[in-house]
Length: 459
Image 1 (cartoon, rainbow, N blue to C red):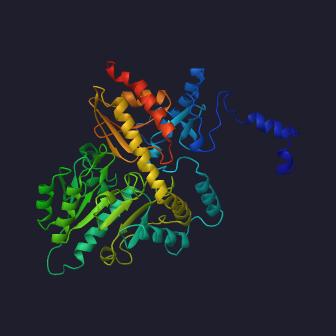
Image 2: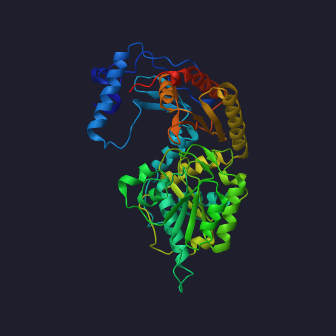
Image 3: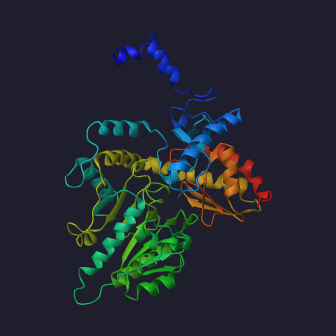
């Protein structure tokens, strides 16, 4: 019997095959075809919580058996997504204000992205960097033409991008200094996050990330984010190879640098030949309503690291740099097997082309202002809310208490948000395609869930 007859509705084998396949629960709603036309009904919860708990519990139990326990995951098993909505294994619907931690800038299942990934996967997926490929070169050309940079190095993640930037900075400082010891130190700032591999981890300020793995890379000085005098003095010591700074801190609690601070770093670095590195892994690529977060300052780095949204959910990182930095890098100085594959770069070209459209960026700025203003209006006077801050569609609501109960309550009500900072900041990084109607829905759920913070915490 051939495959076609197997799928015939009159085939006995077809009947047994269909019976054996798991069926969607009766309350499952088909995901909307596009985020802009999504149905914003209140999520339809499974009326039988026992069935819901059992299915998710079985999957979570399997995870605990086989996956290394590095994540304190929410008890939520997601199975599909479309636009700005996600669905769990029981078909329950969630409005996604996490974007896979600021990755899914075009939402879930963007049709153009799906089409190019599907097409490229059927043509050529991976060849390694032993050979040239057109998608990699095309993506690099777009990144260069739309930025300060002259050259690009591709990798697979944000932490890899920052690792590469560390190596490139060290190599750059060695090149012209044959007669004296080159500077090898680095400056990073409070509340910063640059990654979890050993070099990037050494640049990350939170001690609880570093302590279990010490000794990490030596030579990193942490200074107060925004302290112009301390940074200037440390840079002028002549011992610093590069300064790593996020123009807007995501993991650290949605803190924006001032123009004076960023400008002072540029001046101090120029005075002594130190490199200025902007980490835009989370805040770059349209998240702030500008293609690059540093555009608002009119200050440009020597190196910039990118990752999260660039390939729309496929793993990629990129290090953008000036020609003077690239000139110090030789064959064999760094490399990556998977980086810049035809598949991932093709996906990234589609994402970058959409995000860099001026009208798209303008819409992000408009929606970001609307979102922040609405949050301030509806929640700004709450006694537990200290500040609502952010730029574009990276918004943080700082609380006087832990944000975890609110995050959990929102999840139960069909809204996914994150924590940041010291666990007291609600971080909201929705897909950049989100509508104002969906933002209103998110605010409505937040308002409805706020009373959970008044309840006593169980010991």
